[in-house]
Length: 371
Ligand code: UD1
Ligand code: UDP
Image 1 (tube, protein in one colour):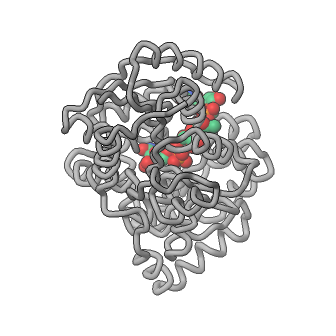
Image 2: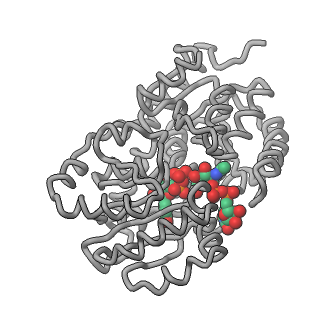
Image 3: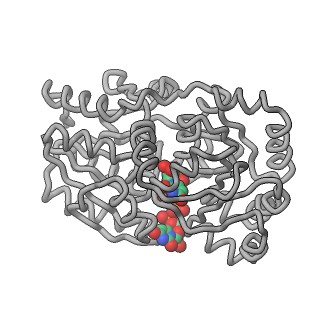
């Protein structure tokens, strides 16, 4: 069996790393394809180093473009590569444009698509990621879903139950394994014990001046905390464009830093009082590492984290962000409940389950698209 793996951005590299490790462990033939959507050292190469990943066999180099141009360039590059590689399955992960392009190209070439993290839905079609999830799952043959809820979403949309495998999320594999490594290898130091780790990059927050301003105003007021903010390149660009960068840089309690490598970031997260984020992966990592999470969004495709009691949706509303954080601070029991929220994403064996299921399908001759 030969597996082609498509990755394009930071979270895909992190979440596919345990799957690649599992494939290597079993000596399965594979080809690693990087679309080049993320290309800065600290958004891509750094993770290959931290996670000891092999160099990609193919690099498409799409770079930053509009959605249509990026998807088209990725599709064009992938079609040629898949013609040459002739894999038995194309694996994609998550909801980026790399996933959209990978799923569309492979399914039209009648190559089965395996979607890692299938079935997530925010039910908000204004998010580019929601469109990518729906289209990718329409093209998917093997759905590796992280939770029962994700599996149900697919069943309601008419997916064949035989092709749905509930695996847990590979982020748990990545996060638990690498936190141990980080404890030995990372040299990161923390200036305070009341750290808020902050990340944001979601288009609906950082491309919108009013929302970005409202969030930054909340940050400026929260001076009883030390806020550590590794700034995503999209966010840096927009903070500068909207003249919001300087006040943050001048505030003593806010540390604006470059995006961190995975080991440093995991250690920072594990020492945080709270995480404030609009990231998908961080909502999952926070509950895995027992860190209370406040999500800077009004909806989430990870409702399991909210239902478990580990995640609160605070939107981009200055008052709500500040008041929720102060409520947590004033009520230690409240924070303990969030810390003790059960992890809905499995036991860290998702990649093993993904490869077991794929081999099983292949051995039974079910890894085929019949015309
Ligand atoms: C993309 C994904 C998003 C994912 C995120 C992970 C889509 C539609 N979006 O969003 O789902 O959560 O990655 O971080 O696929 N840039 C750089 N250097 C880089 C990469 C980007 O400077 O290495 C800047 C460019 O100005 C670019 C902007 O960031 O225009 C946005 O990059 P893009 O890949 O389009 O989207 P992300 O916001 O990173
Ligand atoms: N991350 C990192 N360094 C940082 C910020 C985030 O290593 O400075 C990791 C984080 O631990 C998580 C992933 O990047 O695993 C999340 O990526 P991102 O928020 O960019 O994308 P999303 O998950 O929202 O698609």
